[in-house]
Image (cartoon, rainbow, N blue to C red; front, side, top):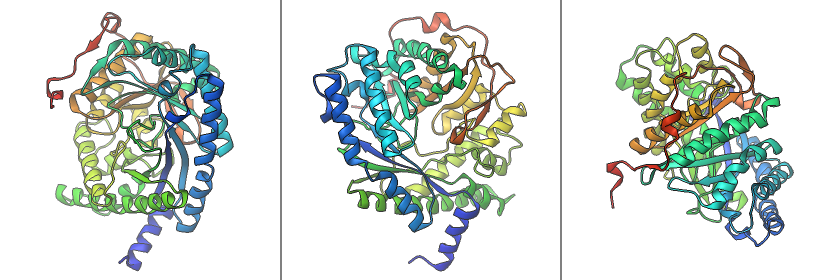
Length: 454
């Protein structure tokens, strides 16, 4: 039985502490849309998206109004397009036609983003994979609502360093193709290791081939709620700290469970998973960095930061797992720079560097996320950053990712404004020493010994 006290507490979380359902994401399989020509494939894709997601935005808005819980984003994830277009796409421009079809559907449906303009190449790439990857700069420049991801490694397969080298070049080319918008295309492109099939968060969302024909996944967020409750126990011991975070994560997740089940019922689509991730926004008071400060750090980046983040991440998962039977996606604490005002403040104060952020990614979701770097950063350096994060994910059996934005014409000390949930970011320094000879080697980094579990 829900008490009136719990109702009032939840209302306070929503009205004063930035609790929201960050996204309702409908995953849709496009495997049955593949046809012999690009035109037929595009026609089938558009028709299926319009049929299944016709009421997605309205449903999210209706639930938000009726339950009093803000539902911020309504999104779609689709089967990796490299698979869908493998039979009909003969050149990069063919894949760009599919991207434009997805974008047309997104505009018609009113969703924020469609994720899944993706390729999974953790052990090697097909001809279609290579064509899609080469099409990414043009596809992201020619569309508004498409997100792209490329999976370059996993614990089971190792890291495809040919793909890593290629993605450094693609990130740089995407930055140049969207230079007039401060290289915004790179904010919609992420390179992953150990990517889950059911992630509702962009830019890494795609609908895995192991998923049902359509499914509803929900991501909940409440950094402001956690931060607020920790203020009431300032100076408490670690046991009290952990118990408080766990209990708060439980309450946040129950809100997401309610919304997810209701959305699935109204849309006639099975409920998939709840992603427990604490996802910040640029809004003041909605910051993971603020939680770390409340735990006891002057700024994120200070000694003890990785330990504090590990504690936070683990307690969020423990509390959330008790609130729902279906946990998936990424589930942890995001540390994007541009989307978290507290992280931005830490960078501006000189407390936080890319190297420290990399250490923090060992214990959180997901990786080096929404980081602006100088526009003259070599493609090889970007490939090296991708390789480092992929290695962390591979060895630690966790999802890691890189979403860096080499902003053409900008250098360290400049600030870039992306707008909306993407926020703004200070341009961060990248190590100047070269890794060209390393990333130019051909082949794969083998999977670690503990990957052999059959």
